[in-house]
Image (cartoon, rainbow, N blue to C red; front, side, top):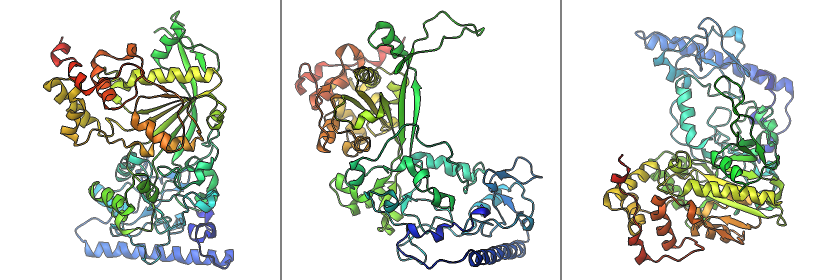
Length: 552
């Protein structure tokens, strides 16, 4: 990164409120050379000190962060040689992201297991920070600003070039940040790896909408997240660790249920949205005469959570202080800065993301003259992936996709939003415990919600108040066809300012027999139905399959 010496995060006037007089390149070069010389000297001194104070321990050789392919050759990446460090000394990379000249560094070798921690984390442990600490100057973040450069980037990184500028708590990638930490600890990933975003820009446009500029409309993710590499290219190049939190792409979807729908003629092959699949191959690689079925062309977006804490608190009608305290206390104290850094208003929670699937022309989503069909679906791995028949999740999802296709073929657009909220956000372990209780205690609809409450203490933790954010991000202004029975989803969307013209429940013929318990209990609790209303006193007569009936 030495070729970027003049463009450092410390010298980005657009990122902070302070301004400084211009400094010549010659002066900056001299300062950087002196800093690097001091850094190298400190490392050599620290290495000698380690040898004197720990005579019984073999001194660690300078090593790369990642394990090299050969212990006799330096390791290089697309960004140049990996940084090296002596045990117990600061990394050989300066705060400006510059590496000392390779001629001054010993040849790297694989770190010993006992030395890896010193190599990765030579400095003392920093449990938390405070607003008035020396050098702390978070990048200005104005949530809801119309100009993204005025709004500012979201920077949670603790890398040396970003740690004093960071304006967000948490880490990118949601729950997957844990796997990233493990990869670094194992030496598989260089923590200072600089991603290349060449050719990663969205193939379809998701342009700014008026809702992006309302700090109350979108509070659960960064609406500019898919445009980060383009908007803040200069700052990223200078070494500031800014990452996309949204990715948009195009794909084909292949589902056996849709193959069957095409054979029955309930969805039509049009060559654009619904496409005939390529011929199936026999084991000898000759083409089979079997019907290959169809596939769907779609656009899709993956969206990671980025919470604007004041807006999230307001959405749930609680104080920001209470929200911060609950997030700190009930995650095992994982994020102390929720308490110590009230000046930082953005939090990247370690939860699952959401995915948007768009069938038809994406630009139609923000055009109120076009028909729009929507399904908001919460993850159910057992049904969606493995076909469990104790709930209606998969058949309802397939029905919704078919309705989205028909809407798009009528000249409209279909949207499916898939949230990672397994087991009503209670998790799959809790879900399976509830299954056990239901099947052992007599699986009747009148006990459906009570069984969940006995184990989890609550019947549902999906809290749909944040769900409409993604609809506002897409520019959706009205929903013609809502493929959902949920009263919570309906109320959240309508209360956010998006009208719903028609609601669809799941057709009776798609309901698996063992999931009748779920459907009847939900209808009795207030879920939408176009059929006969079900009263609480009727629920005792709806009984699910006993375990004995499944033992064959």
